[in-house]
Image (cartoon, rainbow, N blue to C red; front, side, top):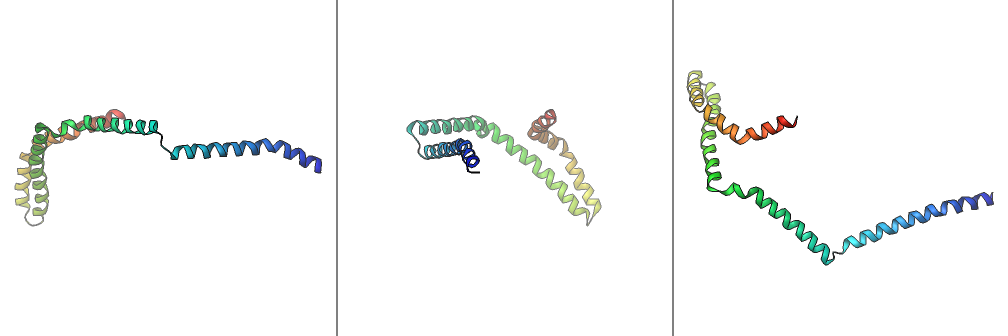
Length: 132
């Protein structure tokens, strides 16, 4: 029995050494990642700067006078439209005739509300349809 046990130990020793070697490699990699070299710091700063530039590029058109005006116009159209629809639902409980008048007033704004909805959300809806 002793002979076979020693053979087993001989054949399993390289596996054990490989395990120790892998463990030491991961330890060295972990210790290496703890300390930032000057080169790694500059690479990280470059990545952060590139990300900031991309963000500025993607949002630079949002603060123009034209964009702000479009948003204000959308709020001025959609606000009363939604308010009229919701108020007609509330008024209907008490007086259906007045609710009908309020809903007709909302109907006068429906084309404008549709245009605003398509302008602001149409692109995303079409993009979702094209994906499928």
